[in-house]
Amino acid sequence: MEEKRENEFYPIFEDEKGSYILNAKDMCMIDHLDKLAKAGVNSFKIEGRAKSAYYVSVVTNAYRKAMDIYKSNPDDYKLPQWIRDEVFKVSHRAYCTGFLFGHPKECQYYENSGYIRNYDVVAVVEKCENGVMYAQQRNKFDKGAKLEILSPEGKPVEYIAEHIFDEYGNEVETANHAMMKLSMPCSEIFPKNSIIRMER
Image 1: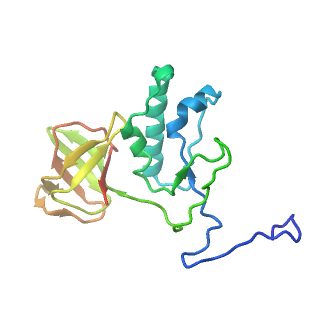
Image 2: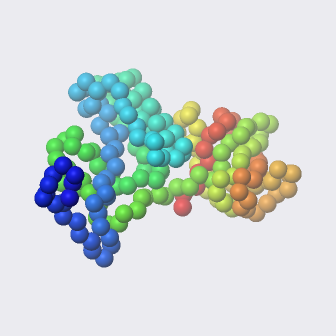
Image 3: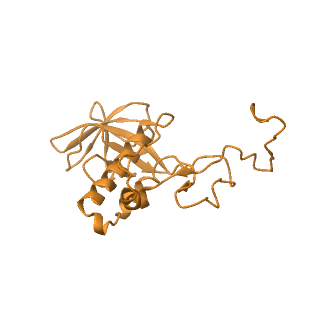
């Protein structure tokens, strides 16, 4: 019962998968920035207080790029698929558009109470120089792993970890020590703090 609604009870039930009182979907409006802009919206709030630095950086980056594309050609806004894909590469609940297009028929998620998480951050770039990328490990990955490097500059770049070296220059089969310093050959230059991630 709510404090200021005497004798008014909110029904709560539980099935074999649990209860769903707090299983609201996450709002995602990246497909509709043109409609919001034309309706007069000129600023956006991205929820980040209870999110990881990875979530905030990836989602903010995606919306920033989407808004720049809209502003460059508002009469013919087309969201590139890779930008849309970015919001699905962070830990999130199922997405919806809230109440912006009427009452949502499916505003709660009944499959489970967990988050969808298909990518892990495996390292963060410290610097690139002389054809070598230096990074610090965040999660285990192996030699030969198919990775993506995300920087603020553009779309994610695919990278195969054909060689991994520890901080002493010894080639290793896996980066499995927490926060280990590592290096990998790389012909491109990525800014400091670019994110290296891997699909689970």
